[in-house]
Image 1 (cartoon, rainbow, N blue to C red):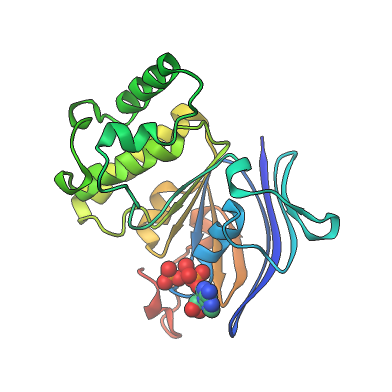
Image 2: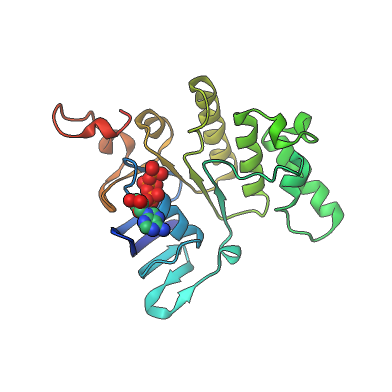
Length: 236
Ligand SMILES: Nc1ncnc2c1ncn2[C@@H]1O[C@H](COP(=O)(O)OP(=O)(O)OP(=O)(O)O)[C@@H](O)[C@H]1O
């Protein structure tokens, strides 16, 4: 199985991120309270944020290694990233939002890949709608289709369900799990919702104050909180 290994340090103003973890690829959840460094970790894996030092590798592919002077550009990492707000282009319809991310080998290739992605994310009937004409869940599916378009080796999701109502969250969690299994694609997802982590995770990395506090199965890492302490910051 491919392993994602992240061992990095980064100063962000007063905040110090210092994490060292390796996960077998499946669905990994980065879990922790607001401000603990989850999104910053995703950004370093995607290549949008450069660590001060350390190493990031996915299997044999080294994305970053300060000791060897390696910093692969985001475009060359083959990492798909879905932001919290989905970041769709408002002036492009669903089809064109997705096509934007498909390698332009040929028109036939592009049409074929577009059909595959529309079917995979169940978006066929929405292909000509604009983002403003879609529900939050539909926008999220378009964002995932766009992230998958260039055949990434890793998919990163930053709180993908945060804007959705509870019923839709449940449905889309199931869809995500289906996708992950169907595509055998490693996924790293950020959440601070415990139920989400319990339902989805093969591995949970629990973070606090820019550091890894625990790593393991969801059941092991997310055991019920003690009665005292400041766990109120988590969504238990
Ligand atoms: N460019 C920056 N300059 C200074 N501080 C930053 C910068 N980016 C992030 N930070 C700080 O780094 C810390 C970690 O931020 P990050 O967004 O990674 O946390 P998070 O766990 O994803 O939070 P949330 O769950 O609220 O999205 C925060 O304290 C944040 O204020």
